Length: 82
Image 1 (tube, rainbow, N blue to C red):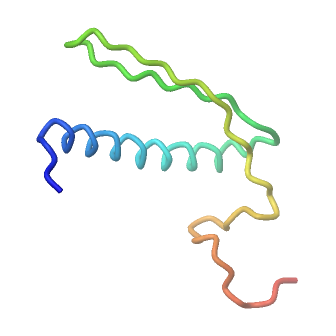
Image 2: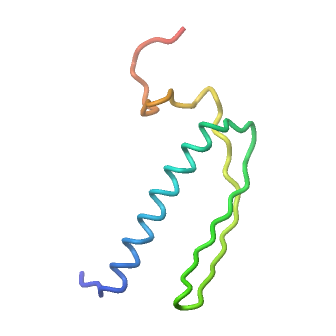
């Protein structure tokens, strides 16, 4: 499949935005430990072409009983818990 440089560059940028944004949100959610959903807002700005795109939504708080321990992968180790 042949993709032009524009599409490849845009996909690479959006992947970076998605991955780094998810990491930052997860880190902030662990630190804040909200008890309910939080509102989120993203502003994508490309001044050179006059673009400002806003995305708003809500992110559910992770249930404390399912939260992975700090530094954990969230996968079951197979060991019994007390």
